Amino acid sequence: MSGKSYHTSNPETEGAIDRNVPDFPIAGQSEEESYFRTHSAPSYLPEIQAQLESFIEYHLKNTGKRIALVTSGGTTVPLENNTVRFIDNFSAGTRGATSAEYFLENGYAVIFLHREFSLLPYSRHYSHTTNCFLDYMVEKDNKIEISPDFAPEMLQVLRKYNAAKSSNSLILVPFTTVNQYLFTLRMGSEALKKMGKNALFYLAAAVSDFFLPQSRMPQHKIQSQASGKLIVDLEQVPKFLSRLVDNWAPRSMIISFKLETDDSILIKKATAALDKYQHQLVIGNLLQTRKKEVVFVKPDSSQDWVRLTDKQVETNVEIESLIIPKVVQEHTLWINS
Ligand code: PAZ
Image (cartoon, rainbow, N blue to C red; front, side, top):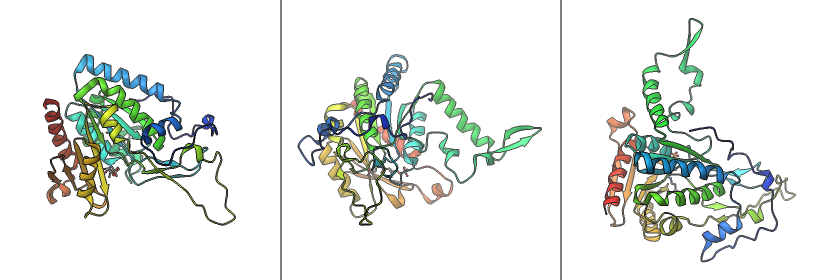
């Protein structure tokens, strides 16, 4: 699950700005293709491709498991080529990391396409808490031990983590920028084509809607302006979902998420996404209540709310433990359809 030789969070300075890269067309018929023509793929992509292909091959030949590609966390939008400043969003990757664990528990192999340094399956229980990691340990007879307060729960988590590792069921694939995300998703979905309907895309990452095209990105740190203002002119990130549905992974089941903050538009936006991209399911959620309720919106216009009861909230039940079994049911229907 580890051993990678690259970090997506380091800017690729050797790929310093190339003025020969064509300008990004502002709008057009095939904006997705234009995007890939006018932006450079991350240099480490072939390394990830080889790892992914061997992961998929392993499961095709040896386990017959379904594979879920789970996207998780937010993307950054760099404002400079040697990046000092970037635009980011709130997502910590809780939905993605938690869902990945429940997919694994439900017998799936998981490709975890995540924002580097956001939450990861299993380690999430300890990595981003307000506790210092040293608080989980105690000293006894000159040795370190896990504190008895945490040990029983940690043992459960450790067992699940080791099971995922020893069965080669989880592969971690990082991204940081929106560009890295898009190139990696395209490559991953093409690699998953051979899984046919046994592949499931669970797109929980909070991908930026706006970006600064490579052709317009300053090479070095933006200096203070005489006017005292910095005006940033961003383009809309092309909508890749239709490419994913039609070309990159045409037989896979595709589930996208829709996040809103205004509850009066959530269903409308989820339905519009289904109409536009013709995929199988949108899971809608509101920023304010996303850990307690989500809504499954399907092409037949059905709306199925999944909610934690007060009791479940009190006892720390994770909503993903309700979401994933329903998703698995939908995937089974898709496979049998
Ligand atoms: O990472 P997190 O658990 O804090 O948030 C999860 C989420 C709200 C980003 C996810 O559930 C979601 O809705 N993702 C898609 C966002 C969108 O593009 O609308």
